[in-house]
Length: 309
Image (cartoon, rainbow, N blue to C red; front, top):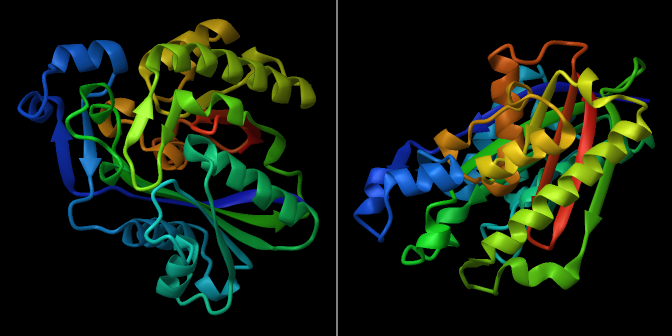
């Protein structure tokens, strides 16, 4: 069995919070934020719940893939901002979709969550345990941000992205994956129960670049693909300086890296599926292209996936 991407969808809150808005809230400036992060604005879910955002992205992905909710075998939702302590937000989405009885669960792997979900979906499909799997990355990080902490409040935004995978007798779209975690480094990026996001930015930067470079090279070697053969890299949208440093380490031009962080900020588990959807709809990816995706997040967790779209 091969794993195919057959549909994508996104939901972005209507409310926009610009750097100029943040200048009125904390001691910062548009120039400072842009220079250090590449972020110009981000979306904030003022009225939308995470369940609503995830459900809307899921509906768009299902429509894009000409699939009805009852055809699904599995729903995986990656988030660090669940609707409730329990049940899983995936179950709430399953109910909203009216996907009766569909096996649904959440993943908590922070910014790497979507790639973790992709890896699980690929394993289920290739093992013959599922034919159609919906993987959603959704975050309402505005609820986890200390709006008085200028080092973190400028970084994060809300949104959701979804990707529909299904089995195929053709060659798999998913060529190689590799995931890691290292809990001993949790103090670099974490949030206590019912607490705010806390981060050691300088230390995290170094770990992020090194870990993503290493895992990218690992999946490329696993698939016997050279970096220069990659059509597009879709990195987690955390910081444009991390993306630029990764491009330099991999020896690839910046033009091969899809970047939308200036519009949405860091949407954690939602960032890669949002970027993938936009890249496809903008024609940056066409069938047959090699696409490399990579992320690192709190946990610490990190990983990469190589696709032939």
